[in-house]
Structures are given as C-alpha cells and as structure tokens.
Length: 355
Ligand code: ADP
Ligand code: MG
Image: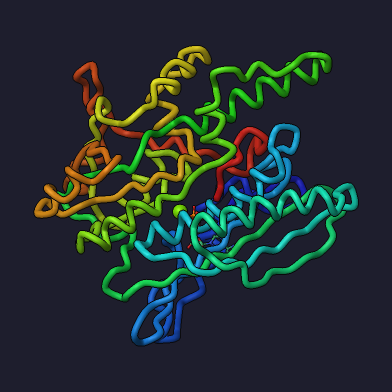
C-alpha cells in the first residue's frame, strides 16, 4: 500500500468502502444470533420470533451539513430520516432511535432546542421513540450520530444480495433533486460570502431545496409491501446516487443490470435546474445522492403488484453478471454504467454524501 511522507498510508488511497473493508476484514461474526453483520443497509439480529435491524450514521458539521443554510430544526429532522431510511431499505419497520451529539460551546441551549424540535417531529412522523444517546463536547462544530433500530419477521427482511436475472428494477421516486438543492444552497452561500448584503435567490426552488434539507424516508413503500404481501428480492436506499447504489446491489447479488435512461424519474425542476448548472440531469440522478428513495428489484411474477404501486417507477431489469451494468440512453446507445462514486475523503466540503 502506498505511503505518504510520514510513512503512513493516506486514507484517500482506499476510499470509504475500501477503508471499511480494510478495517473490518478480520472480523467474522461468530454468534448464531448475528444474521447479517457489516455490508448491508443495516445489521440483522435474530430474536427467535422476529429480527431486529440496526443501522448507525454520523453527520459532521462542515462535511455533511453547513449551518449557514441548514436550519437546525431541519438538521434534527434529517438526522433521524437518513437513519430510518436504512431500516426501510431492509423492509423492516423502524421503532427506536438513539441520538448522540458532540457540541462546541458556540451552541446555545436555544439552538439545541431547535435541533431537537426537528428530531421530535421526525420521531412523530415516522412513529419511532427516542430512547437514549450521549452528549459530549467538541472542540469545534457539531457531530450527530443516530442509531436506528427496526423490527421485522425474519422472512420479510430484504438484503442487497437477492437480485437475480429477470428481476425488475424499480425506484420509489424521482432522483437527483437533493444534489441540485445542495448546489443551489452552496451557490447562494458563495454569493453571500462575497457580498454579505445580498439576499439569497431561492424563489421557485422550494421543491429542490426541500429535497436536500428535508428528505423523506420511504415508509409508504414498505407499508405497501406488507399490505400486499409481496417483497423485493433486493433493496437499498439511494443515498449515494443511483449508479453507486445499483452497483452495491449488483456486486452483492452477483448480477448485472440494464437501466433505461428515459425511465429514470426526474422532477421537472431537477431537469430545469440541472441545465442552469450546465449539468446533464441524468448525471445528477446517477451520481448525485441523498435522495433517500428505495431502489429495489422484484421477481417477474410480482410485476402486476409493482405496476399499481403508488409513485413507483420501473427503470430497468437485472441481467446476468457477465452482461455488465448498462445504461440504455435516450439517444439509443448502450453504455457501461459507471459508479463514479465520490471519494469521500477528498474535497469533503463538496461531497456530504457518505451516509
Ligand atoms: P449506508 O450508506 O447504507 O449507511 P455505509 O456505506 O455507511 O452504509 O456502510 C456500509 C456497511 O459498512 C454497513 O454495514 C455499515 O454498518 C458498515 N460500516 C461502516 N463504517 C464502519 C466502521 N467504521 N466499522 C464497522 N463497520 C462499518
Ligand atoms: Mg443505505
């Protein structure tokens, strides 16, 4: 492994997923109650008559959020939502959360009350109980770590690894908006910093900015699977962009995928704003992130079920691994789909996307 000037290895060499693999490769799970350890949206623990599903995410000021444009109430709300999104991605029902905060002295009690007003609202909206956490000081800024715990029947749990050729690839909603919301907020921040008298120009951008600041977890989809008594063969939440998250499903399932560009859902505001930023809207959907939609695969026999599923889009199909991961463009070409991915340890301020 290459080393830096001090003879130590730079974490950039590995990237986020490489680093996790490197640090955890010696760990095997030994307990029969550990059904799934590292490597999915959440771990799965056996309790006999049911399973618990557990996921943790950390949000760090200056990396995942910027309080210049993130209201603390929204931040509290989002910190819960991004965690329970991982619970839904296992086809489980979130039930409890713990919340740990590290705060510097710049935060007042009133500021933290705002943060917790958002936490309270999210707990209410998704029917979860806040059951604990930890509070400590930080030399600078704020860090928030949330653990979410969910429940499911063992046979209901959906892993990233169950997709097979012939399955239908679906997503619960439009993609790319949250990334563009971040671009708008960053743009306005830069304008404000260079001319502090200016008011932000956020008019007509409520939808896109809302997708960034106040994401939703896809409870309705999981409720629908339970109500209609069918389930995906594989599922993941889209936190890092369609390409990267589809790669996780393909890698863990040992399959390829064929995505129809024209079927990838884009909100009209996303298309309009992407063009304003000189970006291809499909690139925002593929490589943006923080959409917190569910990407899932369905056995062909359940096609009818998914056809009538509210808000769901069929965007492609699963193919054999040797056929690769392909994008059929609206121009009629077939490209290899690249999970550009982001190197989370580089240029971190622009990539708040490693949840
Ligand atoms: P997600 O994007 O769904 O939140 P991550 O990409 O953060 O998932 O994590 C992938 C997997 O690696 C998960 O199973 C997670 O629990 C595990 N993981 C991440 N960081 C660590 C770590 N520092 N030590 C052990 N496991 C980790
Ligand atoms: Mg996830």
